[in-house]
Image 1 (tube, rainbow, N blue to C red):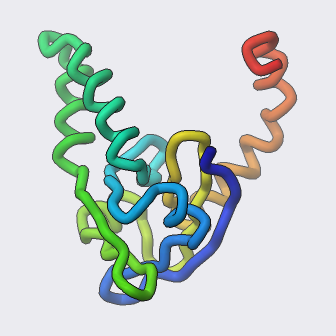
Image 2: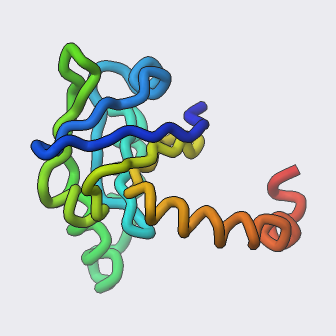
Length: 143
C-alpha cells in the first residue's frame, strides 16, 4: 500500500531522489507516465501490466479512448534509481507536470503521484474543503 507525502527538489538536469519508502515498495524498476490533474504517476511493473490490460479493453473506435491511450503510452518510461536513489525524469514529463524545483511525492494506494509542490498544495487545499462532501457521496463504498 503506497501512502504518505514527501517533498524533494529536482535538480537542473531533471534528477530527483525517490523517497526511500516508495523505492522499497516499488522495487528496482518502475514506470512513470503522464497522469491526471497535471501530475505524473509512478507504478511498479506489475501495476503497469494491470493498467495495460485494462487499456486494451477500451474501444479503439472511440476518439476519447484513442487519445487517452496514445497520451498515456507515448509518455511512459521505465526508470531505475541510481546509487543515490535518484531518477531522471524526461523533459517531456517534467514539462507536463510543471516540475521545476520543489516536488511532492504522494502515495495513492497502488501508485505514487509526482506533483509540482505548488500545484499539489493548491489541489490539496481544495480537496480538503471537499473531503466531507466526497465521503458523503461515496457513502458505503468507503466504509
